[in-house]
Length: 298
Image (cartoon, rainbow, N blue to C red; front, side, top):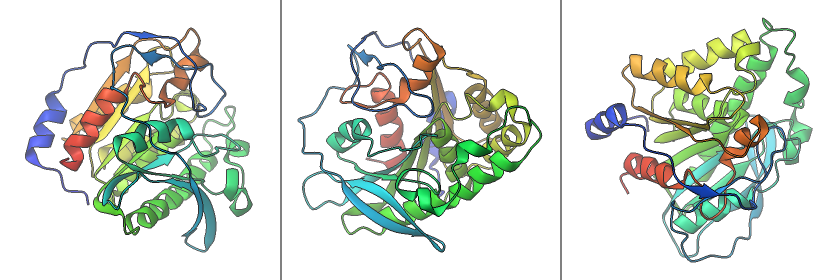
């Protein structure tokens, strides 16, 4: 599923960064990836919220090699086939069902699958908590990067699982992720199999400056990406360098990509890192839908 049409490549490589969206501060229905964050703002001019649909996730198990992992599955009403999003959580010990993300994607007609990777949440039995492997003092240790690459197998398995569902259009599957989940989206884009696009919210924003092997691994993934990637962050995130550098790596390699650094979200770096939280009308909604629509030829 790594093919890219010439029309998309032209659009992605020349699309200018759009102007900031006006927004006001409201409570969010989702939890932020990585460290807990303050409520994220919602835009006053963004995606028009569609009619609400019931959000009742189904807990499912799926196989990742010899491992049995868990996750939460949402679907719109009707028989389908629907496009699908595999949403990659961050470093949370208990990622939960991500209702805020479902409120956005399901109400715009997507199946949403929220797999829990080995060592976290409902899959904690299947591996080591990845947070225990992150050591800022050991900047040359590959352990953290290696663990993320191992978890990428879980994302690949989740993509295969959701594509096999009878009500999913397997030609229109994408992956979206926040923080460590953003890194997973980029690694999935490098593999390409089963997806047509990837969205990376703030992947590496906390770890970029302190982990050389991970930084190098992400650059390699960007250079080898087989599907378009949309990099986006809030300006006041911990570090916007990853999005800028990785999008440039893709551009230099001739791969379609998009980049948007949005205005500050809240007042702190923690607020900025929580920019990806969902809900019916997130500030990033218009652009993410536009990106997915082009990639999926909707």
